[in-house]
Amino acid sequence: MTTSQSWSGIYKDHPVRPVPQDPLARLTKIRADYGAAEDKRRPRIGLACLWDYPPQRTWSYTPWNLRAALNGVADTADIGVVTSRLSRALLKTSHVRYKNGKLTSSWRYSRLTDLHDAHILHRGLRRDSAERRYDAVLTMQALVAAIGLPAPTFVYTDITNDAWISATQSLDVCAALRLVKTSTLQRYRERELALYQQAAGVITMSGWLARSLVEQTGLPPAKVHVVHPAMSSGWSPSDGAPGFATGNAAAKGATLPIPERTAPRRRLLFVGRQPFDFYRKGGDLIVAALKTLRREHDSRITLTVVGPDQWPMPGDPPEGVRLMGTLPPDSVAALYDTHDLFVMPSRMEPFGIVFTEALARGLPCVARDAYAMPEIITPGMSGALVTSDDDRALAATIATVLADDALYEACRKRAPEMAAYFSWERVAWEITQVITQGTAAGS
Image (cartoon, rainbow, N blue to C red; front, side, top):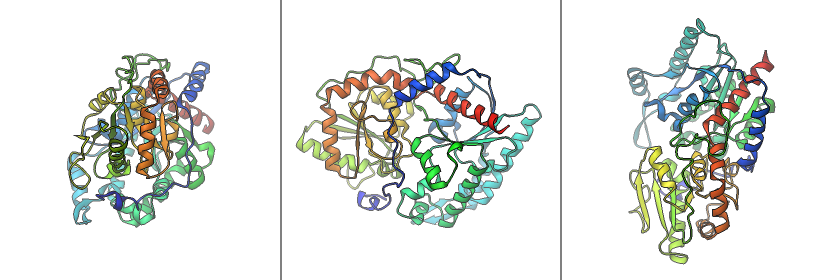
């Protein structure tokens, strides 16, 4: 997929509608629950994850950050799957095939890989069981290798196969996006469902996905729980128990002064890898909107694009576009303070952690009124939401936000509380609450 025309037929409006919610209203309730909680014992949790190389980058840094935060509220051990370089090479080589004229490997979706992962996971659990008994195992995403584990299993995930399939034009299209056969995707959907049915609880990153699990997948509402994730960039755990206080040290630099971003505001920022994420996240729409903005509103408006190492659209980057390539998380975080608006009208977005990072630095966001985005961005207070692929409507929305002094002031004042809410300490405490209550109910 290299043009917006070819990309436009991939996704469709998802049948499960978003669940708007101001994160700071939820923070108030969580703080009250934390203060009133009588049971603050430390559960014993085994963290199960398919670790990448290097492990920190796995799933956009989520398991790595969560594991560090869980150590503050639980007795946590890593029982995840680390595939040796030799095993990884053998598995990849044995599943090489041509796809769209290129060599690809579907090793992650093979039965052989499933058996390999299950062997490592179960072996690690048996090894540790001689020393400790886990209250629960927490898997990162739908780790099908966890099927049949002896300990109560909880799943933390941002997306399901049912939700993915419903977001695309067909099952075949969804399989093509995942670079697997339709039959393979269908098999993984069935195995994922088996894991959810076995699990003591499924913890979703959004209320939107929770609704999808109930309405589409058919899980009982009592089994589904919502715990929004936290920021990836520059996070380090603070000492002691989480208090979710204003200015919490969960985000590196969260206590630094928030830029005021006075008018005129002209610097737009977009983050999305190439080519898949660039178009999925609406990068082509922003480029088209920029041309309108520079022609009809202000010729000095610019766009910084982070992610693609090469320009993903036909031709060269248009005037006003600066291509930064791939950057580490801390370098991306530094860009929030030097820009005036974060724009990412994703056609499909399981959550959107970059929005949380921008808002923690007082940078308003323009996103789409779909998926989890309305659970992060509150129109009129932290940004705006668009409803279609109309690039002229996007340009008009961007121009309106850039001129809204009241919105910028509200977003700046809310930034420390947004940093407190989107902290991994809050996530760890909420997840341990779900596990503690879930295991108590099942005992």
